[in-house]
Length: 335
Ligand code: FE
Image (cartoon, rainbow, N blue to C red; front, top):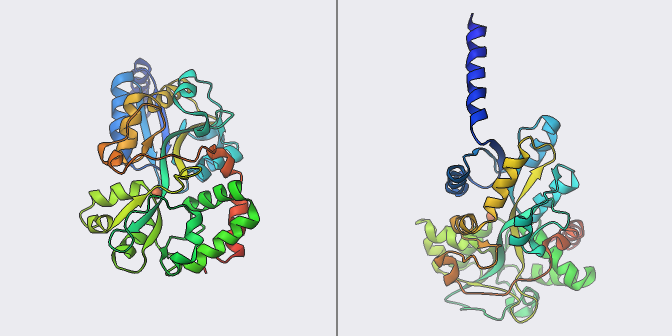
């Protein structure tokens, strides 16, 4: 009897969802509160229900483990290394979409359409307002110069954000020159690499160092956090390499899983995320930059100034991840 009722309940549910415009299951390492308003807007406009599983780490591994049985249709993730990891492990499939191709510049999507960037973030150089002031002409290369001796703070060289930066240096300068540069930066460190990007800004405020490497959106995060606002207020954000190739950027992005069961609805969500409304919202909530041309960042982000980004396709430097890790080991950057 109980079984029968359960079966009835299930068929009622099935009938209900058949009436809806569909469903999409998303694995996201973007925090819930960041994407919730955007997802709700999509649900309202499309009638498609979106289920989000959030985890800070390990989602690629989970998808791999689950294989064909995974419920995930889309992966929403940050960092080019995670996106290329999905490709390398053959966990995603290409999406042939005119909207995605038109809205997302070629340097911010996989040449084979297996991932698409949705936002960009700059690997910025923060400087002490009091001791150094604004450094409009600074470059990543400058960080190896003697004038910065004992003045630089950074998180681990092996954190993906720094690995991506080192990878881009390898593309531009080759292995030997990048190694020399890394040795120079290491020699200029005020302390051993430690903590996260925000901790380095705090260290500038505390007088431990004068410059730090950090992603641009953390300035927004610190400004919004009453406990960290004084850290942010102690620094300027500087966009490196404006006189030459432009600032190094990384991305957040989206990919469709290989075994997606709701392909059509999933593609609709991808296209929504690349559209004007979502592009602005998506960039705004985490103080990032939209990838779609013509979509403005938030007023706060805009107030940091405009800048030129390195035009190198992000997939190009992703290829040098192993080389970068090798050099970081060779110079014992973190030790
Ligand atoms: Fe981050």
